[in-house]
Image (cartoon, rainbow, N blue to C red; front, side, top):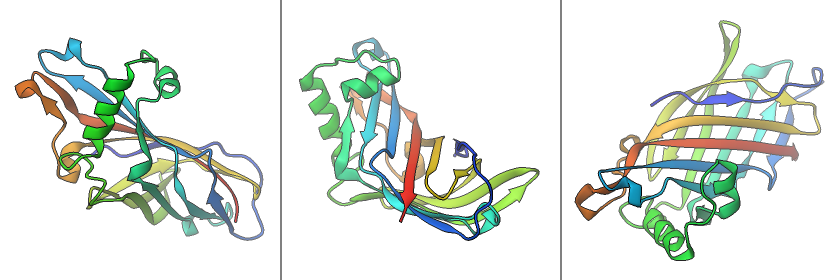
Length: 205
């Protein structure tokens, strides 16, 4: 799995003590899914939006190695191909309600995310350190009941009143024990790769 590529804007000076922030409704997680197969021209690239991203981060600019972070996404809140989100990524905004509903049903179904059995996607920080002038965090990403350890080079912005972070990670279906969606004997299918785009916005607890 490719490591997460995260950019978080830095501002403000060192705080006197660690600040614990709670994620706000501006936080989002998007998943970019790409079409493949000999009949791919009949299909669409997709973007899945998680508009409910929960969690907390504790951060002290004077001691960044002490950072703590937990993020939870309820899988039932995932939405397939909202028009405004597709537009954000330069995709045709309208794929039709029937197609959108079919994509969401398949995505949440037994052979994909199986949201009835696996109600959450989670990330938990396990280590933070400065390596070669960069800030590196390590954590466990859990999807569909399987957990993978990932390393994230990060930059962080926190001023005691607000924490903001954005990032991207490429994962693969096989990392979490399931196969890309496929139809028509594979003539229409999704690629293995999934790009996750994360935006964290948080305010003091």
